[in-house]
Image 1 (cartoon, rainbow, N blue to C red):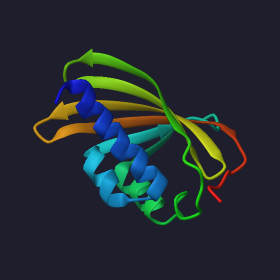
Image 2: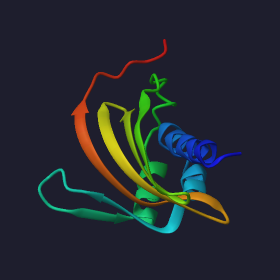
Image 3: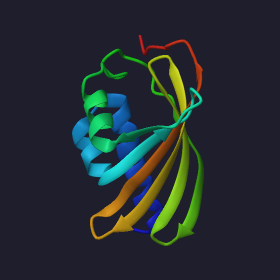
Image 4: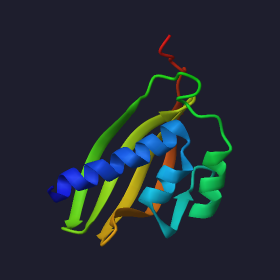
Amino acid sequence: MNKTTQLLDAISVYLDAIYYCDVKKLDEVFHHASSLFDADEGKILADPIASFRADVGNRPSPAGRNQLRCDEIIMIDWLSDISATVKLRLQAHENVFVDHLCFVKDSQGWKIVAKTWHLENTAEIVTMD
């Protein structure tokens, strides 16, 4: 399996983790020391992965609400054969986010070591009914 396929698999795990609010998938794709950052309200919010994991695990999942899955890979920027930055757009409930995910690859595979996100806008929830 080539590096692109392996990275795409890791991205898929991340998107599944958000859509299903699956903390086991978060554990699979995030490095245990990773952090998350946001500055949407004019100040930098830094969140360790443990805090983000608890938040995701305690919210209703978009899948559980039968929400149509809406995510896209906007860009992959290869820094080297073992590091890349990925830009994604995804909708979780009414919130549409743009995420920048910094991935590195070690013996355990591709891991997110940092995430910066931005709340791009809100949109109507479309269900699969």
